[in-house]
Image (tube, rainbow, N blue to C red):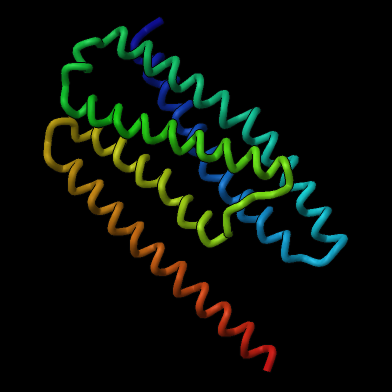
Length: 184
């Protein structure tokens, strides 16, 4: 198969893998927030989110991770000199972090399947940003390769992530203050 086809398939499956990782955390958040609802809404929502999560995880996210990895290895077989490049070695560290992140989502999925997701929706909102940081780092590394620009790109996304986390905290405070005011 031609190099450009392999590269295209790798990019497609990386994209669908990340889409699955981004959405799975949203479903975990919705599941967690459904716990605060009254019955029967609580049971109905938790059942629906569990079904949606199972389909997303096993029909899109896991297959995409496996296929992205197969095509990545294929690309490295076709271009073995990449393994001598610093940018690729650093990218592989981020890929290892992506697999660790994926595995952490598997642990959360297993908890959800048992009906007991142990993380707060606030933590999950923050955790969702980790995949974004990894995505930015990998894209900057692949595009900018040996230039120092990828460092600034990663630092920039970490800065944006910190700003997002602070924004989430502020939103949470405002939201709880509004609900407090309604109770008065």
